[in-house]
Image (cartoon, rainbow, N blue to C red; front, side, top):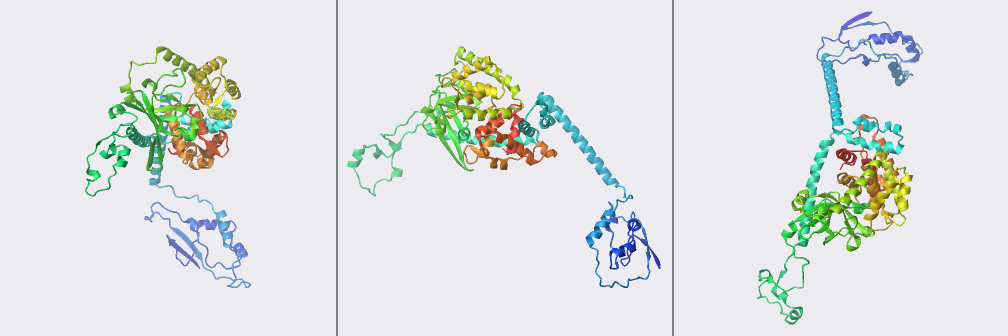
Length: 595
């Protein structure tokens, strides 16, 4: 008996046969072959849910196609050898796998609706507009900077570095320059700069208050009976009397005392000052990361330096680092001359004799000279207090200018050689000099520096080397020896103090125990590479960028599991040579370290 049913869905008691199922049956799935593989009788055929098609307008049934189904009801013929309770011998998973393999994509899929076409067109327009804006910003940035590379060149120069003969270490180090093009760089930098300014002003206010308290003269006021001599007090001992006037309401006057103030400074004298921030020129991390605030007083040309310490979040301490006194230059063309306002500017180096300051740390007193670098200064106060008529003489100024020209000429020649190899060369020189310094004094001879330049294939003419050696030898306290830190700063140059401050911030964040060295494990935990352009674009993974950084940094270390401050500074000193914009360099430190 044949039964024809028309409509959206068939009755529950009868199966629905689809065209795709008919095709599959024609390809080999006959009733006979199915019965051979399965001994149990198919009372209820399996449902074919793959033929159900979702529609964008589910509430409209007018577009649903009407299906026609022919059901052939015939008497069932059961094999005599098989009973009703015989279990199916064919597993369900195998049957399902065969059905999936034979399913094909239907050719009569419905076309996309107008709503999705509109969304796709809108998305396509937005992507094209965004790409045009990105190209325009990149072109404007390239015109403004002139010699700066485009974001693609910065990120892809690592891959193209083989043309320039770069080593693998150099190519890995250049990957760090990609952070300069991270998104939202300017906005994040502005937010953090505001917070840093507020914190810096608060720190300076605390230090200034402590300095005023330490140097203001105070007269001693107490009980008049304390003005008596000690012998009189012992002889005229009066037992306590309840009828005497209490001490808190007794009349108090000035009296003779053994307490003597060291100075007669007033608030007016101390207000005529110039405030500056400083740091210690040292490869020791504990000394280099000290937060120092100094004051230069114009009434007697004296200066003092305080150290600001912070313990935890709320506890702070301000301690004298260099006592208030009149000091003079200890090296250079101005040796023996007293410090004046003209000697104070951002980047100036103040030299002191370590033996004159017994309260200094032992690591600083090991050297004969103690060098203090001015990192920031109150320029408004300096300009208002500066006396233009005072100078050091035209001969000294001209000699110093000539020395700077000689050193700058050598630095310009070496800058081209260090442009892309700066990290490898400067970190290698640091390890090389430390290996030669057997005594640990930081001083090396002339032949040691000449051999170092040859070892690292740095071309410096004999005349330039002799000129720089004479300048450096005149600035140092020892004869025939020069501090190799001064030699590196003079020959290769150094970062400005703005960049240097962010290097110190990054290291101070890592060195939370204030030991001067950081383990490689802690660096791996704190380093974040998910905002690197290669990671964002999918060109590299976070682990690859992190491993490339650790490989180059570990190569600069004398210990395989530890990084000192000097080695950390050498790494970024070499990386700074190829970056012209300060904000790009700051972004390279802010993004992975979160400072």
